[in-house]
Image (cartoon, rainbow, N blue to C red):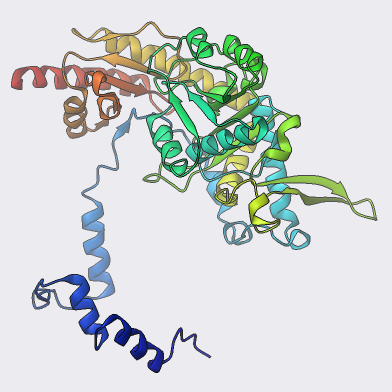
Length: 449
């Protein structure tokens, strides 16, 4: 039986009520006096092969084979072939959120293992079953802090990703949430950030490494947050956690982040993966789900949805969040990736990223007119060019390079600054060629200025 939303008589009654005789008249009133579009110039139908060839030609116009030095939260890491081979299996690829846990033991076990690796990476005690992406995870952490403290003021470090800041601003638009943004700085002043906290502050949030690639020491800040009764939140880059001190050891209460770098390809913005881990004392204020391990009456290991704080499971007004759907397939990719490379592999990847980034920075600072900041970094750093970074990036695309992120796009006072990221995929030859091409692009910009 087809679903018919209203009868013909009901349709006529609705049209009469608003003063029109037909749907055509309604559309004309809605669109206005614009003439009807000319359809005679539309091409005739084409075969499947012709359409595919045309689309392939259009896709070929994309610069998809650039040597990538882009970063800013999304990174071009190597992904072992086994990741796609495993996660593309039908039982994984088509599985949905496990509302019926008794029929979803495989999915639940995978999520349980994902939670375990997130806890080990971050140095925290409890992780949930993943979130949409890094930006929404940060917003959820802020709202979690509001629930924990009963306060509504949050302080965000200026070196948090501007993309994340926009997401937080958007999601909190209709909420009674006071957002305080500190000035941006390549190297953050933890003491000054701590001084911005008061008895009304629910949370202070930072990024680690920050959006400029700097690895800041946040111990002083987390101590200051605890002294004011505020929740300390950290948005972390998971690959960097193979080398730098885990946020849990720095005293953070909540750790979030973007999991794209864990086996998920760069895909024009998604789908990606958010993660969240907290101290045990706060887990009942977490959004989403927590999968736990148990045993049945026969002593066999089983997995259950231990915590279900979404509106599907409890009264809507008591739900911790309504936007924290489980990115199950992306979480599975992250788990398979980490399983493939292992603990030592993650350390080796981190060491390669860091060493190659140091080499790249040396090469770029050798270019006349290029300078940098004194910053402790992992695989990402800022260089100051003698001309507009956005223009240089455009010229570098013609030379076959995604040269980095021009910071002037989000920070107008940094128009000449370029954020460069280096992963384990970049070779020394590529880095040297990149530096030579950048020097030529800068010279071109100067000549045409």
